[in-house]
Image (tube, rainbow, N blue to C red; front, side):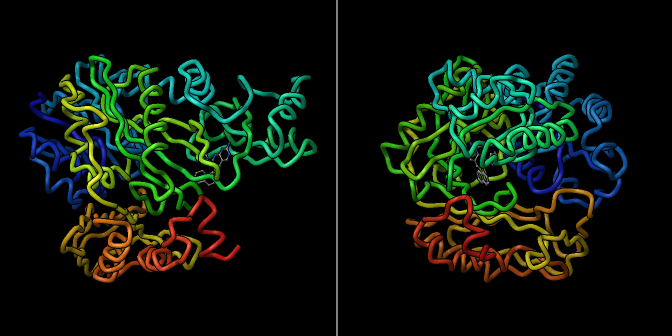
Length: 449
Ligand code: MV4
């Protein structure tokens, strides 16, 4: 096991990782930018190092600075959290060269899954269903372009190979706009990822976003956990996640879970990762992408299984073996997570940084809060606006919804605008209560398209 872990992140996830390290008896090093001196993760860690100025480019993304901090403090591993350097193959490579363990999969798995065209082809080879689409990149000069799209059938979607999470994505209704859509997607992809490779897929209408947590060890064993339903999103940002999905029963769970296991085995995946699927109204499912990191929404899985995924991730990175199978993991109830952001939902989610005069976290039975907030803390405008995650566990979905409503009512955040009022509205919505929310829920039922 590691002796000392450096956490190359900030905010709630840095706090979450420090907690896991403490329970494993591992010493911790926090890193922080100039503006983050008063952050909770800095106070919680055994040691801290300033790694640069406020802008993330010069601090949380500054590889030489982070590696130096690890060497100076004698850390033998780095936990990247999510975002920042968590899916950066170059960073994973530099850690390797410096004999510092990157707590995540090998760089080959990150690389293969980061290239969406390569990932699609790997999944086809592994027998995992993918959305019908082009075999490789498409271009406007390809004489077969219209034929490829016609065979898939309109509407189609143009996606960036280096994309993920919705960037560089376009829906194409008909042949007339195919070429212009490809050109726009290419320009967007070039600007965002410096890679203009795009491919096309059949557009799945009103899909649900259902993902499986997988865990892999260095012996090649992979297990899956019950799914998370992340269908309630806004501009590709998840707002609410729950587990199990109200849409998935035991037989679909088993079928999708096995596919997720095969997907992870295809890249010899070690540590924790997530296989995302699109599921259509009939229950057909398609591999969408793999996230090769711990995710924001991991706590809903922890709540329903009783397993600490961050401790598992660290143990697996240290070479320990999995001690149980997918079938040994039981569903203890229903969990829901609400992401609380410092944004104004009435002003098109405009960021709302500033000083928190008062923060009172909810509590009581079945309530968990993952946050780096405290009364008097100033939220800087430079980083992601996620300030807290409220997670509840109930014995069934109804209890979980009532419990979340109660927890949101208890929450006091004074000084800034947050998404708390929006969450209250969503929880009261009839379609949400019935478990019917698909990916167009927000525009359709909350913002009345
Ligand atoms: C799709 C799709 C429909 N058909 N792909 C959005 C995020 C990115 N990971 C992929 N996304 C989608 N891909 C095909 N072939 C619809 C979406 C999509 C979506 C997916 C999950 C949750 C919310 C969404 C909102 C809009 C579009």
